Length: 108
Image (cartoon, rainbow, N blue to C red; front, top):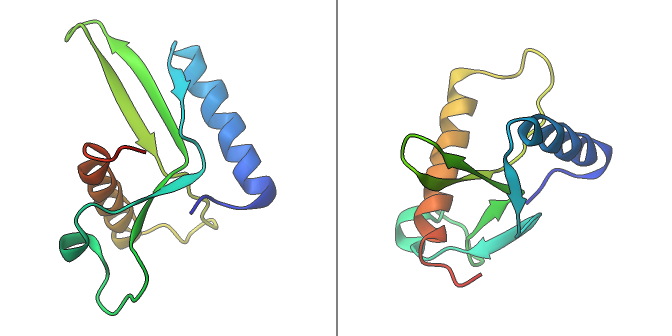
């Protein structure tokens, strides 16, 4: 699920400001979770309820070299200074990869 409160608003504003300078577009859905299409592979062990994947903001840009639109799914995070480490980054990237894997087949 998306970050909550003022940090969520700040993260959205910064990402919109920064990426719009590069002519990136923002697309829906925003601040939503969608159902996992491959729970056997993605659902954490012992989790009882349906597994979902987060989507905070989706951006796109036209790649001039590939001549196609590239989409970037984001799961905005906020971390306290000094709390970011390799395992947190690895976990966040793995989560994004699973999200994209299921997003390809999701009607949402």
